[in-house]
Image 1 (tube, rainbow, N blue to C red):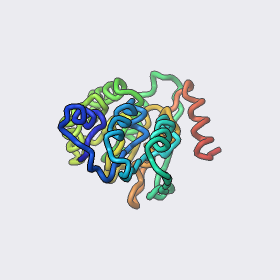
Image 2 (cartoon, rainbow, N blue to C red):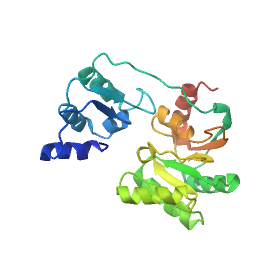
Image 3 (cartoon, rainbow, N blue to C red):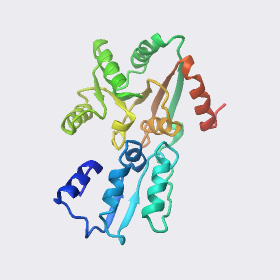
Length: 244
């Protein structure tokens, strides 16, 4: 069975699902589920499973993000002798050209994005935003500017999300404007470029964003817009990346 924590917990409450014979429990994107407030639901679900089960927890950004403490708490409270396995990136970092663009004024942000899209002309790209509201605003502005853009965020119903991803996959739209939570778990092949409308709040998330392009031997470009107010984030990021 595959499901969201909330829906599985609902079935357990209704008695329409039993996990008494469960052998393996997989928590995919465990840190994000905890960051989104699902820890009580996960604990309730785990409490309905046999103690003899195998438990696997996966995270794209490791145990360093906002949900890290919750992941450790789950591991310490419900796992027996847990083992942590880290897998290195599968793409060559030299295949990604990463650029940072300083904005003279906040009002220049969208125009900078528009000019970068015109300059690079990617056949497929993702624009990352930090909020759902900004995701909608940027997608609408891109449409008005003559681009074909789709907004992807957590407020969408699953059927609408699936429809948008099909449109993006078949090239009906060349730009996907998304929040980090909505984009987690997406497997997008041949992504030409990534644009960070703002620097991610978490340093590990920035690395994960950039790593979506330049995969499987292809090259890619990652562009990040930085205002004066975000300078401190850029300093932290360059230190985190080990760059001067």
